[in-house]
Each structure stands twice: as C-alpha cells, then as structure tokens.
Image (cartoon, rainbow, N blue to C red):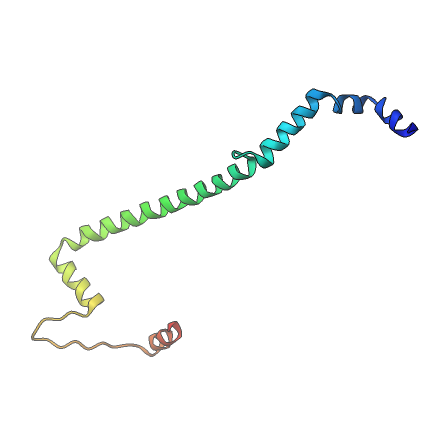
Length: 112
C-alpha cells in the first residue's frame, strides 16, 4: 500500500483524478468514438462529399460535351455523317464497304 499512497501524493495524479478532469476526459472520448456526430463519422461523410463533388465536376464536363455535340448535330450534314459513321446507315441506291485493318481485328478479338 506504500506505493499507491506515494502515487496519490504526486501532483499529476491529483490533477488527473479531479472530477472535472475525469468528466472532461469522458466527454472527449465520448465525442470522438461513441457519439452519433463522432469524428470518424464526420471524416467518412467528408470523404463522401469529396467523392460527390468529383462526380459533380465530371458530369458538368460531360454536359458541356453533350451540349456541343447536340449543337453540332443541328446541322443536317453533320447528322448524316454521324449516322453513316456510327450506325452504318446508307441511302437506298448505294452500297457500303467496311474496310477493317488487320491491327483493328486483333483489338476486337482481345476486347471480347
């Protein structure tokens, strides 16, 4: 019992064993780990917000690209060119020949 009474007389023990300090320590631990608004939950929510803001920027860029594409497609010549290249559309009185290079055939088989 001699060692415990010596520790009880130390200044740091008296400060730490104070009721106010114990309540403060309990409060800090509670707020960091157990509260519904804890530090860890806030950190996770901040990461979610950051990811959503990155998505927002990506979609804004995509909207700008799509608006430019729509503006380009208002010209009937561009629309016809796009339809012919993308969907292989043709007029009734013409034939279409699709020429594929040897290196593009290798890429198609690797992609599948």
